[in-house]
Length: 254
Ligand code: 13P
Image: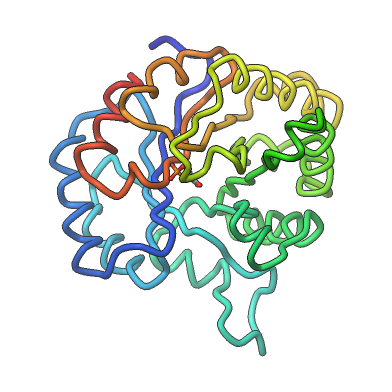
């Protein structure tokens, strides 16, 4: 697939995989995906598996991401993990503002913006997630909601930082439900996201930012989704938990 931006296919393992299970998965992926250079491949295990997975993917084409981090650098923040701590395990990316954290941990756009700035300060690339609920889509508010999430979550980023930021469009109603947005719905929102980046930053910056799609991505729908002009990768949940399905998504995206 000849794309303007290199695809980033990422697995968000969420709260799944013990260390032993994580190693099984990543060793299988390493075998299946050896030699793949056409797309960037990323795995985002839970914090507890980062150390071992980091060692297991040394000298491979698989990169490491985390699923969250603190907006603070250090101090009395019980239960939190800082950007510098992630860097110790060669983490390069961090998912921020996933809809599950927006929903269950009540993360706000302002908090996500602080985290994005802290990630950049530590040379981590944030993957900032946005997306509407079913009620918001059905009431015709998807673009309004996503526009506000972008404006709030990207507040304060320089153009240079924006270029090193990845966005993920994840319609909440398509996550873990088996319902994928139609290819047209996805492309339309991705084009809207890019127009919004033009107005928040500029044309050149907007052209360089990778915008992933997430929500029931499977081997069977990956090729069509990834072929859309403004879709620059996938953030995969359930199908990232098995060697076969995740490696097929990667291969079908090439
Ligand atoms: P599913 O692929 O399980 O729908 O999850 C998508 C997601 O939330 C990835 O971050």
